Amino acid sequence: MSKLKMDFLHSLRRRLVLFDGGMGAMLIAAGLEPGRAPESWLLKRPEEITTVHRAYLEAGAEVIVTATFGANRLRLASSPSGCALDPAKLNSTAVRIAREALSEEKYANRFLAGDIGPTGRFFPPIGALTQEEARASFREQAEALECAGVDLFLIETMVDLREAMEALRAVRDVSNRPVIVCLTFERKPRGFFTLFGDTPQKAVDSLLSGGADGLGANCTLGSGEMIELACLFRPLTEAPLLFQPNAGQPVIGEGLPTYRQQPAEFAEDLKALAQAGANAVGGCCGATPEFIRQAHDRLFPVLPFLH
Amino acid sequence: MDYFLERCTQSVLEGDEEQAEELARQALELEYSPLEVIEKGFVRGIREVGELWEEGTVFLPELVMAAEAMKRAMAVLRPALTNQSETLTQGHLVIGTIEGDIHDIGKTLVATMLEANGFRVTDLGADVPAGRFVDEAEACGADGIAISALLTTTMSGQRRVVEELEKRALRPRFKVLVGGAPCSQEWAEQIGADGYAGDAVAAVALARRLIGIR
Image 1 (cartoon, helix red, strand yellow):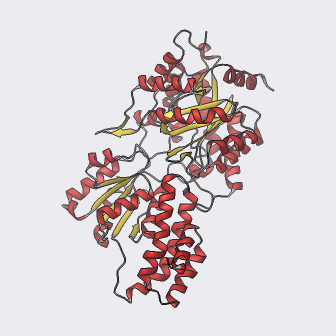
Image 2 (cartoon, rainbow over the protein chains, first blue to last red):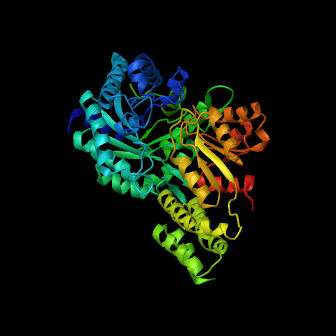
Image 3 (cartoon, rainbow over the protein chains, first blue to last red):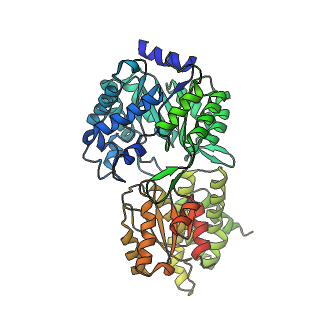
């Protein structure tokens, strides 16, 4: 096992690891036009992405995540502003941009996660996506991230366990680095399920046997509901668990969307997530550097994680 | 309970398109009134699936398959209805995903479920400018406009549709329904829409309440 892999997994098993928050909304606040692929800014406005990474590092995130959520061939192809972009180039550029932010001496012990989001297409009976197509699209992305040099992979916001498994297999085809897989769950009267009906138990069984080093949930659920989900997950496995809730639901006034939840409340809920057994926590939609900063101060009140 | 009608219900519940279509044909052979077969057979199936989806017993694939089965049966039964001067449509909706937003899976599912539940639906696709919603609704004499937005950055387009209606003094003529991940009842009220639905099943209930004939 490489030293880096051991380092990250060692950290994850031994103490609480703080991930960063959202990227897209930060770029929109900086002027990204609504509806445009955020990835287009990797080439056009790289300095804005560096700024977001730096803000999360300053806030105390131990892991920052590349701006590559939608940088897979299938997803890019479905967007007017993304279809002309080369996935391999976007992913390697994203790693270089994040590495630049990490290059300061004081951030030497932080980690970079290569982000992989869904293809935006669906398997039958809903869509016509095939396993081979999904796997090839993910493999191209994973290969570019691996070659450019990420420390770990984060597969996230998956609503169909089958698609998450294709992404996981694709990463395993090209890399031995740690992989964490987060699914997106909804709360139904009968419990927590993905859109395709996958349960936490099924996620644990499939993802761990598929070679994931850690797993968890992100998006859709706010921090309160995420605590309930964490309590369900913890007894199912000893594997590291990551939870990245949304910061409440978005509310639009006259201008840009804002999230109703206050950073202090979010930070308190991340603490409760840690108490429920999360090995790592972070933020999803609506979580800005301020949320992560307050979370950092709430989670590590005595000693910052880098001492 | 009529055994044959029970099989119609089951075919939708099981999402068995071919069986649903075959049963619809048989129903006409057996001289059932099309309306009776729809209401006491197939519609019961789609409503039950909707309930099972809401409680978390079945999920997106089952819901989509059930709606497809329903549509196949309706394709057979609808032409027979006109013979009886029965109009089954619950109302007519124009639906689309707002400009700048290419997410159309949720919108398409809502359209499918509305159709499966007896509404006439004109699907404008994704990335639809606010003005076009109004143009199309006017052109086809729709009862309502359903607007999907999946991004916090595009949801403000839903407000623009309402504004466009007001500008053209057409607001009272159309009910406006909004949906999509970032939306809420509060948002609907804020922009002056008539209602919000959180998923495809809720969208059917909302459409029934706002424009449904029965």
